Length: 383
Ligand SMILES: *[C@@H]1O[C@H](CO)[C@@H](O)[C@H](O)[C@H]1NC(C)=O
Image 1 (cartoon, helix red, strand yellow):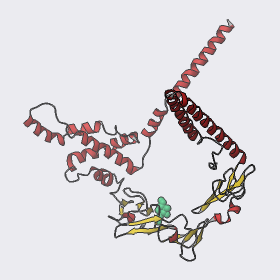
Image 2 (cartoon, helix red, strand yellow):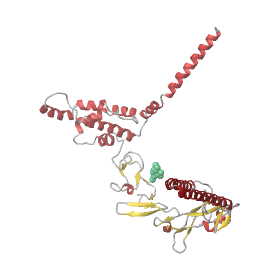
Image 3 (tube, helix red, strand yellow):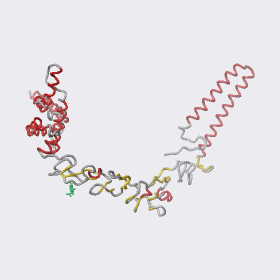
Image 4 (cartoon, helix red, strand yellow):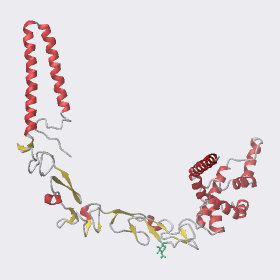
């Protein structure tokens, strides 16, 4: 009896934990959607969302009409539908349903502004066709028109065509917030974003457009153009002021290679720096890659015609070659001897011998690429 109770308890616990885990596995997307739905947007943005949804409704009901009737009747009908209460109701029924961020806020605002929107629909459409301006700017005073900011909808710097030099954003533009100053894009500065920032130079300018581009990485200060020679003032690490031509010039660290790349390495100069690469394994110290660039040869290697090679490997290779050529010679000799007795047999064997030699030479030539020992006097680079 005790055991049964215990097993029942265990079963309950297991099923509970399974239910719990499946329940907690499922929701993430729902939780996210719900979070977006209940998000609160700033005043102006919320109004904009509502009006955009309303305008989508207008678009969707553009072709809508009362049902039934012939063509002539329909045309008349279409006109009356355009401004009808039926259409407005249809739009309002679906209002905010397409909104993902801040849907709840949109519904609340739609309720608050229902009367105002109705007023616009029936009375002001003709005089004020822009419903956004009517509702969000004038009626609720939540927004401003484009490129205007703050309580009184003041003009942004450079209004209307050259707001913030077209190289920045006016703080609070389109809303009743902000302070109307410019937040310049990267590379621009000044009250109207009409100057190039530090480490940028003016690459184009006319009455309406200023273009600033980044200085070369070598420049520590400013510049007059794109290259390292156009730098002005200081240079970054790895570069020096060019005394003759001006600007910055790359430092060739490899002149003092042994200082920068110790041990069995050689130095490769780069713009603004250098890198150290491993010498060929035939070398003990080198000035560049390859067995012909060694300062000294590695152990087991000897210098021959200015190249470090391994005499053992070379000797073995030579012996192998001799053996091979001797075999070929033997085969040819045998063919020749047979030739004295039987011409047909000799030509058949000769053909086979020729084929054998071609194939084996071909194989040797191809496998040598992967051969780690040098074939004749060339050592593949090791790194
Ligand atoms: C305007 O606002 C920005 C940030 O919102 C602030 O950094 C800046 O100092 C303000 N400028 C003035 C003149 O108040």
